[in-house]
Length: 188
Image (cartoon, rainbow, N blue to C red; front, side, top):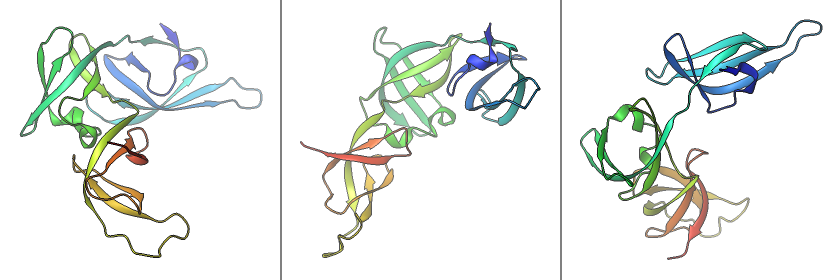
């Protein structure tokens, strides 16, 4: 059991046989009244998002997730195949878990999978990944004022904004926590 004020963004707790992931946390203190905690949470299994309000000190069932490193092998239609790097067991995941991360996955990438009682719940990516540019807009000569950017498409199909000097064939590092924002060009 944990008190609601100890929860932070990304934590998971159980309430009414549902697992909830905290998306936003807000501590509200009114003049002489007691403090309340407002959470924006997502149901881990269904994906629905709701706001919940609790009194300060409310106790919730915190959940400890199992974490395993898995290697991404390949995609077969809508099914993604992974292999546990310690036990070499293979597991298949559907598109519901992959929506947010499929633009960052390349073959043989090692990611962390979180599960609860054997049920995969989410996949954690590294904070940045290196991806090859397969298409880039043409740069306009002389357009250098105010740090201009252009759109590129990466090997996973992800599109992002990069500086004008990035060309097709370059490898760029993108931030997985900020919607694929460009970080730097990687030397090969």
